[in-house]
Image (cartoon, rainbow, N blue to C red; front, side, top):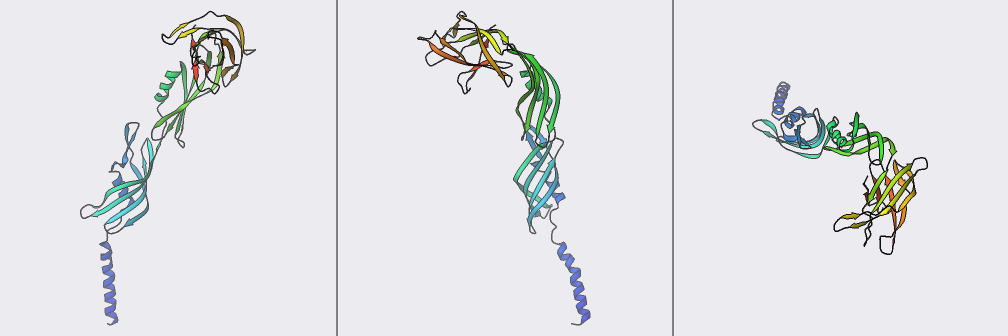
Length: 312
């Protein structure tokens, strides 16, 4: 074959090669994947029984396995709306059809979605708690920590009870984890003036075969000496009829010392011999007073906390 014929054959092959390569279908592009995913139910999100749509905004192809008819794509998918941000790792299965070209057959979630909210919870949620737990309050501020998905609503409060007059601040903390959850209320800057004056009744001072309720009347609280002046009486309680028979205050003008720990009055142990029980019975009470309750623990470990009833 002479040189001129060889050149012509070589040129013919070069001209035919693009025709061969043009017959091979192009791979699915990231932009096509994004558009196709937005037509699936992956954009649907349900939080706290509310339905949202979170469109796919970005697709990053991590790896793929493809041939002329199928394309298996491993991708990181990013979604975003005015309320939420989401990230998922997907396996997306494409097939090539004669009509319509590349189409998603299915997708599987390898991990995710991780869901992050872009704003704090509505203040109405914290108001519900404040209305139920504080007689007087003022809203101060909210602080949304997007990185830790935590929202804090701060209030000042004041009030009075049968044990104290008080004021302070409280932070209501909510955490978002596929829905808002209430973490708790954290009081601080608390100012207390204790005034547990009056008669209190303890009805659950019971042993195995006896039940001997007690009444304590606090007539004076000395905040300088950290002590109260009190008197007590033990009564009789009929468990069948739930009737309490009060006795006269026979023990009067007694002194009970206390200390204040974490804004709680902690009394020294109150000890007496209960003569209403046959043969007499040595009794002890571990008493505490906070801004709301006068209460005691039935055991030293404090597992059984029992509030007293304010009589008058």
